[in-house]
Image 1 (spheres, one colour):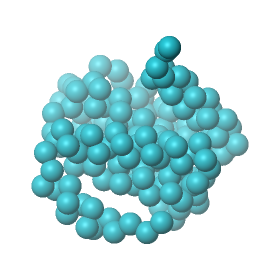
Image 2: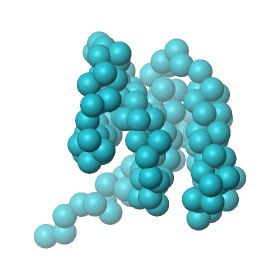
Image 3: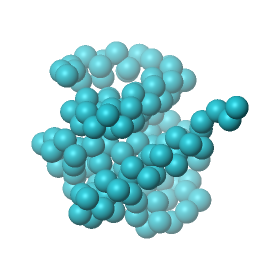
Length: 151
């Protein structure tokens, strides 16, 4: 799957925040489907696009919902990067997330300490991949069951 990230970035630069959020949510949903199917390259493409939107939106007002979804998206991105063996410096990505959280902390936006918020991301980035795979699989199953329709 080939995606022109420059073109995508140009397109989302003119999009309203609510449209960007809707696209972000759809991309993560498709990315999670690709994780379930173990299509790591396709999942990586979806999460990299979602990450691009995260970065665009991170300059706007930060709500607890945005921050939660941002952190989950980044954690899942790191997971699929590791599974797909995509040539991106995960340590650099992890440091960028930490810098972003520290900036929010200095603005008194965070409700929890940075060390608590970054812990799952550090775990996914640094623990053995077999343990991470098991944990993320359970996490995604739990997350999907929370949002499933009860009949």
